[in-house]
Length: 96
Image (cartoon, rainbow, N blue to C red; front, side, top):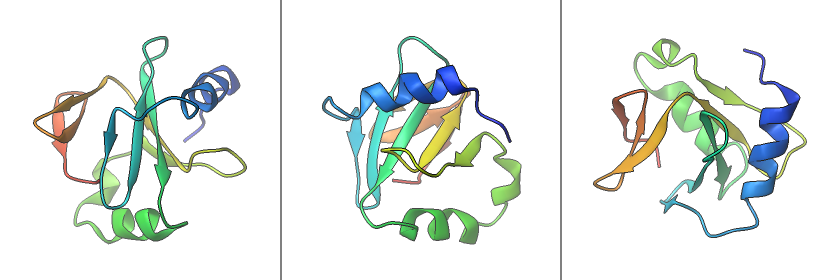
């Protein structure tokens, strides 16, 4: 899936502030300007490997790995934090 350059630039600017959520695998940064968020992994590719091993991962096309950024994963859609879990377009994800 393609992520527009303006979205990537907005997400890049977020990693300078405190994360919205931090877990064992990484930190989540939610944008208030675009419907997206990014995750900076604690261990390069460990988070992506975890995602790929999830049953039914292909049903999450809005989770996009990226390279050459200060973050590693883009979540496209409406992102929020509820009870310590990521909510992407109304679906709770236990990925951090």
